[in-house]
Image 1: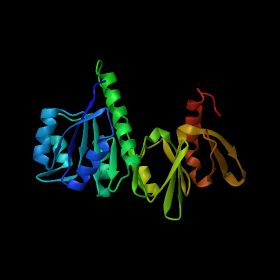
Image 2: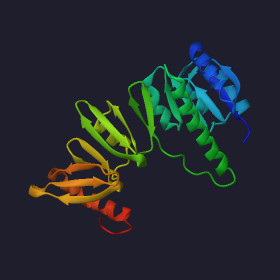
Image 3: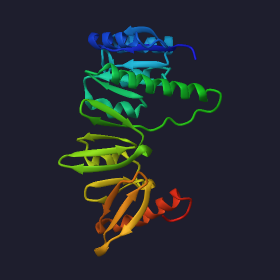
Image 4: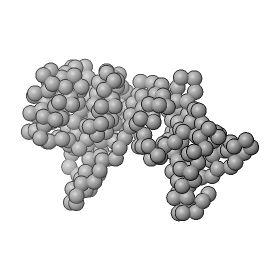
Length: 252
């Protein structure tokens, strides 16, 4: 592939400078220009048609979301950079690949750029055929970072003392997002509550061991085990159906 064409549209000079300096080390990315407000940024996106757009939220004349609507060209990879965390969820609704919450480190920046490269590569690979859906991502605020996760990668979400611990593959992150908040974000019927403090990905359910008094222990394919409360016994059929599907029609 040729160099990735990039544009920065941001009202804050210190963020533009940080992005510019960090981009200088990315030899496969060509920075076509920096723009400080919505109208000039919108014109630049239409004229340059960048593959990668670094975008602020609050721009002179319009906000970043207005800019995307006004541009005839929507870049395949958009990375928001902002000190305002409240816009992160909306950013992922417009298929941003990442949301850099100021201040961010070089390591955090490099992870965002790696996601952008992957998105651009997927777009390039699909260019000969009909476009496919962009993978859904959810943003989880953990400390000063926004962690991007695909719902299918999430194994479990466990609430404890005002926080939730999200386990996805070998990584886990701690967030103040509540179980109710996760239930609004995640696909219904796939993520189910099995006790007062735990949501699990039912498609990863491996086995259920019944205990006394109507309770049970649920084991995930990852090896995690949780109590399956009798209060949630109405969901057992969902779990068993998911187990059967995951095992090719055989109950675990």
